[in-house]
Amino acid sequence: MIDNRLSKIKNHEVDDSLSELTDTEILLNFQQAITSLYPHLIPIHAYAYNAWDDIVMPLFYEMVYNTFAYKYGIEIEPDETHTYMFSLRYYQGIHHIQCFPKSSSFKGILNNDYFEVNEESLKGKRLIFKSFGDTVHYLTTGLDIENTDAVNFELVEIDVVCAQSNRLTDVEGCTTFFIHKDDVEFMFIAETFNQDLQK
Image 1: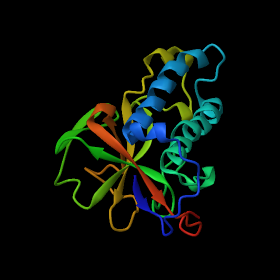
Image 2 (image 1 turned 135 degrees about the horizontal axis):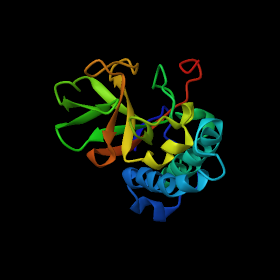
Image 3 (image 1 turned 90 degrees about the vertical axis):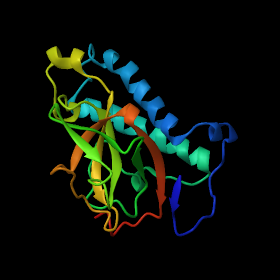
Image 4 (image 1 turned 60 degrees about the vertical axis):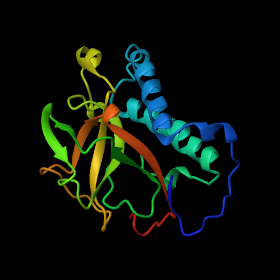
């Protein structure tokens, strides 16, 4: 955890067994859960649109942010967290998750096109976790049932943020793109919630 809170007082029960899990393992546990769950949503027509949002957003909070609360012993309210699948205009003053590439260069993916991302192109920028998914199928905006077999959660959708302003910026012209889940580590960023910044 990177702790950007103004007050460092622990105010939540701690589960010591969670200290053995890295933030990355907590995120990938969620990724495995939605990968396993998704096929069961298809027969009941809960695989896209509002049904998908209504299932995955609270599940992410419970499986990820609530786990961080017990791991780190800090209070994490749902409305003080970056909501799964949403881009924010400003990432200061709200709990979020940062992605750290495992190597100095990797492949970014957008619309199934690959492009090179390296240390130089990331200078002064941070990568913020947005969701798990793929570059073709956007479940929140709808999906035909015949395409559901092609959905996978192997990729991480990220927002590119300027390190100084915490506002969206770009890499290779993209403010949002995908990276393979095996190419990044995840870290929880604890913030003092600032409602004015999130308006």
